Image 1 (tube, rainbow, N blue to C red):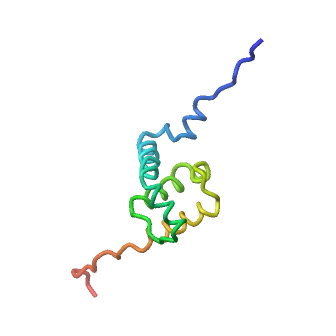
Image 2 (image 1 turned 90 degrees about the horizontal axis):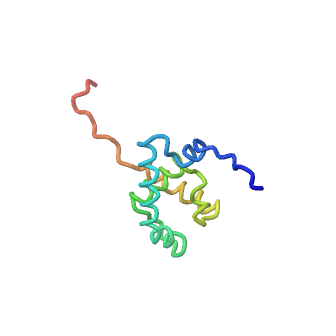
Length: 107
């Protein structure tokens, strides 16, 4: 005799970030973006190229910080590689140019 499966739909919905449409869209769009920049990420590790495009890093940051922190591991990256990608992309995000100087401010 088959036993009933206890299934909680809300848990899956929350884990997949489907409960908030705005968050869901950003997460899934970022996952598709990461798919499209896979060759960049592979070259980053194989050839020692120390460059990942801005959109690729943005996707990595969104996925790792806002969506599914363990996703890179699920895609086959080691935890060390995930840490390297996260560190590189976080650092590249913090090196944006400063805002223009306000010439109207009183000194």
